[in-house]
Each structure stands twice: as structure tokens, then as C-alpha cells.
View 1 (cartoon, helix red, strand yellow):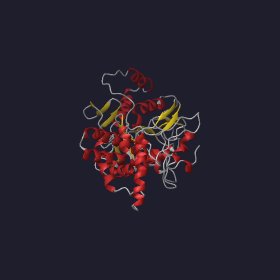
View 2 (tube, rainbow, N blue to C red):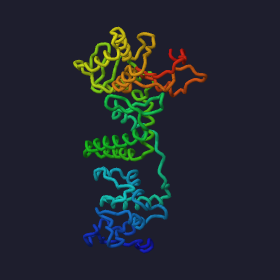
View 3 (cartoon, rainbow, N blue to C red):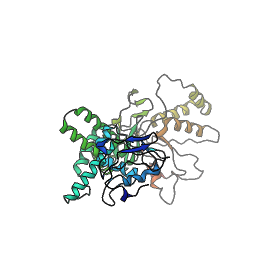
Amino acid sequence: MPEPGGVKNKIVTEYRNADGVVPVDPEYAVAGAVLIGMVKPSEVGLFPGDFVSPSVCKLWAYLMELEQGEMPTTLAEVNQQMKNEKPELLAKIGGQLFLIGCKEQAPVSRELIPFWVDKVREKRKRAEEGLSLQPEPVPLDKERALADTLKVLFAGKYRYAAHRGKWMKYASGCWRETIEEEVVTEASKELYNHFCRLLAEAGSDKLEADRIMGLIKDTFSRSTVVGAVKFLAGEPGFLTRAEEFDADPYLLNLRNGTLDLRTFELRPHNPDDLLTKQANVDYNPDANSEAWAEHLELFLPNPDIRRQVQRDLGMALVGAVLDEYLPIWYGCGANGKSTTAKVIMRILGDYAIKAAPGMLIQKKHDEHPTQIADLCGRRVVFSVEIDQGKKLAEALVK
């Protein structure tokens, strides 16, 4: 491999690849700026449009005439500089970037050669003029501008739960907790695609195209996108408090829609309902319940008790206190209590939960707060197998 000192100010007019010697376009054969070479016959040459295997990544160090310590030495560094400094080239080649950290061959495009030639000239000019080569801090107005765009792109898709300090994502009719990293990644992709569409619509309007290119460049800066996401978290329509989620106690979220328990009308899922729970069942008003009826008749032969159990379970579907009492299923073993509870929990999905063992029993010390917090928003809570002689914690039950 050539040493840096041996390649300075050399004009290279050809390079080698797997197909042999290829001439270099004179436009790109700039003295002291670009060196196109090959390290060994088993490796593929660098530019233009060929492939670079990881073992020749260090050849980047010999491609440019730059001050000591300024030249990127790996494809990962080149990729980062491309994203930060020349997003318009990425848009021109369809947004295809270098593969970072890939053990296989990573693509390199001929389009990048003029970028590096321009970069060398720009840095030399700035150095001669005594200008700083350090990047300027990201102004807050960039983050604000991206946040304003995200308000449109993310409406009905993401919410920020203030009481949890977490982002919520809407999918399949339900709001679920997600991590900020996912929101940032999705924001960068959505913003990039959005601005690329605007760039195509700008046509020959150079001023508008330049403005949009600046926005595209901002989408490649993680710190800028993170700042935009943090701005978004406090915006109306995104910042959501605990009492706003699952606020309507008569809405029951099902897999095929939302059931209004006041009218038994099934309507399409709506993110504005802010439902964080969902039953594991489809609503079918014509469904046959023979198996369930047979089960209840087998274990609850008394029609009055059977009717009361079904009434209790029906009332439990409503997320409001309609009657203040605590049903207790009592009896010897093998009488269907656990089986019935399992069926209800499976059908109700997120709306039902099994309480921590002994949670309702009187103790010397208070229950762990997370055990109580787990019950939030649940409509049916089963506390099973309470030992004989134990006392209920009345205040907790209330």
C-alpha cells in the first residue's frame, strides 16, 4: 500500500478493479485531492461505482490532501460526514448511504468524488481565511422547525405520557408504551421522506430547493432530531396526562373496534379515544354462547347464583363504580372458580389481571406501590386462594 508521503500532489488518470484498468474522468483527477488506487489483486478498486471491502477502508486516509487528523479513516466516518454535510448528494442517489460496520462489501458511489474534491477546496479556503473549521452549534430554530413538521406527520401515531415519562405509540387500535430511541429513528425517516417529496415538488425553484435541502440536512443530525422530539413531547395533542387516557368508562376496546357499552354500538378504532387497554376478542352480537352457558350450568346449578355471577361480570366491563360491593367466590375445590377466572382473563386481555398473592390480606406493612399501580385501568381483578382465617385489608379493598 502506498504511503501518504508518496501520493501527495499526484494526478491519477486510471484505476484498477476486477475488470482491469479503467480511465478516470479528467474532471475528477484533481492533483492533491483524489488518489484512486488498488491495494492487491484480490481487492476491488475504489472509485467509481465499485465496492470496497472492510480490509481496504484505511485507504481512505490516502485519498485526500488534508491537514493532519482531518481526514476520515473509515467508511463509518465518511458516512457520518456525508449525512451531516452533503445531504443533497444522498437525495440525488436515492438516499443510499454507506453500510456502517458491515462485514460484507460496502457500496461506494462515484457521485461522492466531487463532494470530496469540493470539501478539500473548501477546507483549504477556510484555513487560508483563518475561519474556524469547527461545526456551529445547532440553533434551536432548526429543532423547532422539525418539531412543527412532526406535529403533522406524527398526529394520531405518537403521544407523550407525562405521568410515565414515556412515549406511547398507536397500533392496532391501542396506545402502547415505546422507547424514545424508536421515536427518534422513526422521526428521522419520516422527516427525510417528507422533505424529499417537497424537494421533488420544488422543481426549478432554486431558493425553495435550497431551503428544503437545509431541512434534509437537519434530519441527518441525531442531536437535532432528538431536540425536535423533545419539543414535540410538550406540544398540545402530544403531551397527555394520566386522566386523559381511558377516560370514558363505557368504552370497551376490542380487536375489531370500540364498543360503546351505553348503546352497544361498535365503531371503528379512533386514536383520539386514547385507549391503552384492549380485550382479546372480536365483537359479534350474533355469536352463540352455548359452551359458556353449559359451563355455568354445570358449576352453578342454582339459577339465582348463576344470574348474579353473570351480572357481576357484566357490570365489571364498565370502568366505573356502579355498585359498591366485592364479589367473593367461595367453595370447595374443583368447582370451576379458577377455570371461570382463566376464561374471563383470557377474553378481557389487558382489562383483567390477577392480583399479587395475598395483596388484599391485612398485613403489618403496606403493599409495594407497584402492586397497586398494576391495577390501574383494569376492570376485573382476581385475587385467588385466600387462606382460611385471614382478614381482608378493608381500607385497601375500598
